[in-house]
Image: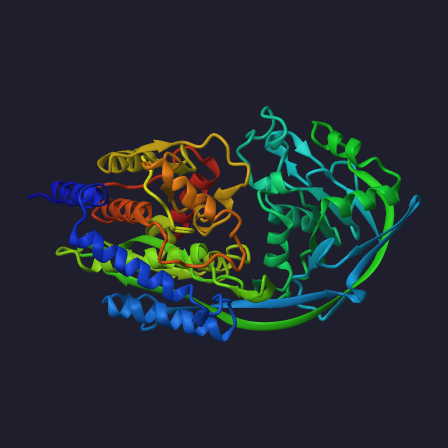
Length: 542
């Protein structure tokens, strides 16, 4: 039997397992998934915050499981890759930001009205008599003919910017309701840094942000992490933060500027930044720590061309122990992302049980500090353990469960690579169809670790169960988990429905197996930026 036919045969066999009758294999997969997610999301693991004792417990456990499955370490004889981080906990002096303008004053209370922090490794930072400027969306995008910074000098000032991008409000701008990277809050900090600003306040609005202000508080209101650099991030803005919609309106009122009119102007081509003529003096007090976190990596070597790799990823970190909500202070992160790590471990076990290993190697990579803007995966793509030009594809798992059975799949980044047809035919073997989202207002494509690989030029596959429930009654289960994102209520329960999760795990397995067996070669097709980066990487490393 030739290799291609073998691959097609075993992929088809694997793909149909979860949608056919219950088998011993699917029962074992479910038991293993539940075992791993319930353990990693338990209070014993303390919310898996990087640079804590719970990190040590978590990464040691994942490494041991890789070893149990018979996988080899990737980093010489170690399952770990050290990731140097700069940890900063920021407090505003006096716990508030006071703004004074020609039309009065505004007092913004830390936590209630704004969440502000710094990623600079300096213990004390003072912004003295800094002016505030409204820069619309804070975007400089030549390819869209858009520059909110044109004609204004923001050096030494604090810029105030809207969340998302203009396409959210006008389908004819940017990519319409499909958010671009320009809509991400992190981009706004990056661009303001390039413009020489002293600080950035992003105006929080729940719908265009896609999450409430409580998520902002829980995500950035404690210790904030960045990759360590020799400059200690002095090239970045001193102050980063979010301000509530009400807080922003009070700033504009102190300025004598009509908030609604200014925002409306910002939504249209040709907007000119508005100097608000309000000023503030504020001091940021930082508790600074430099420490190493860990990515965890293991590999199943291929038989023929082991120097080529399929890389599965899932971040292990969450928010640890934080501000109590209804008496619960442990942010267990069961769905986000103990479930992804559990899926990674199930996949590792499935690959090691194959009677014949694939031609190419398969790496299982659990990364740190995803919640701090994809830091572990970014570091990996900067310092890869195997050459990026030999990395065939990245398949990332974030929020793998709980998920009920669906008759379709969501495919993000559709049209970017030739893997669309690979996903389509593999899904068809499960009796599922592909759903190509026309809207992605929350910018989900930019919010998980596959994005680090994409930016580095590695083709990625981002797909999981869709919206058409096989059993409509399962909608009640989904509704019951509404609002748990980044909350202490994101906990595991034995009542979780994971039938759809198991479908997804088998899909990811089948996709990776086809690439690892050499029957399909992923390539960038529709994204010129990532395709060019891929070509540059191959040229530089060959």
